Length: 502
Image (cartoon, helix red, strand yellow):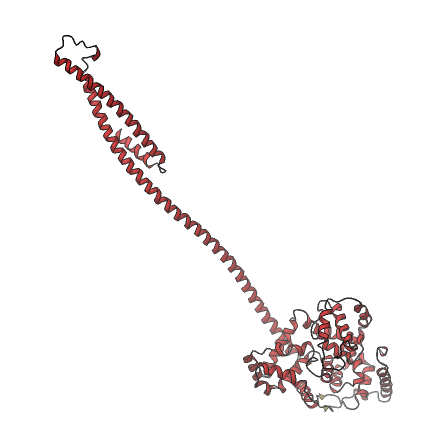
């Protein structure tokens, strides 16, 4: 492990191991003896074991027997982290706390990742220039640390393609680079993303970040009810001010020395500490926030943490570690979120179904309306046609009535003509042929009568011929009327008339 450390840290670690060996041989039981509840020197927490003295001396035995201590005395390690992590040991301890020391393949494969091309390079390069703009080690274009920060972000976007690149992660990478070489910083960064649930928060849909925001709002409602009411009245959601706290672990908001100490606690206690610190910030700023609107609160959050002095930091950490926030409580809030989300999703799906059904119904209504309009048009056209047909039929009936009258007159005249012919025939029966009548010996009266009879017979024959012609014309006219009658009404009437005549 010492081969990856700088010479000074490696030398210091060897010295610590030597001291630890001497201490263990001389006092084999002292290091684990419980001395009751004693307040630690920095006043951050109550300890079940006495913690005091030089942090390097305290960390030496733990580092030398790390795996055993991590397994058997994890709470003691947390207490040591709360007590202090010496600057010379931070590089090593961050690797141990995150588990990066056991992920050698990350360091060994780092160079190969850098040889590839990432689709996010342009975006990463743009964001790198805006990361730690006021820090002297990062604000110079193409500075070594800035280039290392770019390399870590590029390598991770290739290593974890599902996450790719998430804006804000560069602040975490930059903070790691202030404490360790580039390869080790990459390994620790991967572990932070994987072990502390940061990876889920940084996925493109940021679903886990939404869970964290809901959990934070539940904590505010429970622990700071007045502030919760104020936030609700202002429409000030946690995602507006706290997203960067979780995505960058406060590195984008707090000054580097404070962000470094926050990273100590995150690596030791997990993401739960970000909830604790978020609530501590809100608790300390509670009175000021209650007097401000949205713009004022945003400005307050942007400036206050940057101006934190040592006393304020001490107060923030004291409050953070005394708040009643447990993993069980956070799990309950997470379950509530998913339950509510499932209900909302179900409601949304139901609403989508209603909308789909409504669309189908509207389409059917439109089709029926179109069909109804076409049917109405047909009815109107039929009514018009019916009226026209009725008018034409009335005209035909009038013509038929007139024809019938004329037929009756003709029949009467024909009957009279027949009668006259019959009379003439009866009168002429005595004469076989008028032309053969011998006029000799006839009296003038007989000759005159015979001559009149011949003329009357000629006129009757002519009238009979004319009447026959007239009847044929009338019959043809009636036939034409029957052909033009679409409902054959005239045909029926003629048949009825014929039947009556018969």
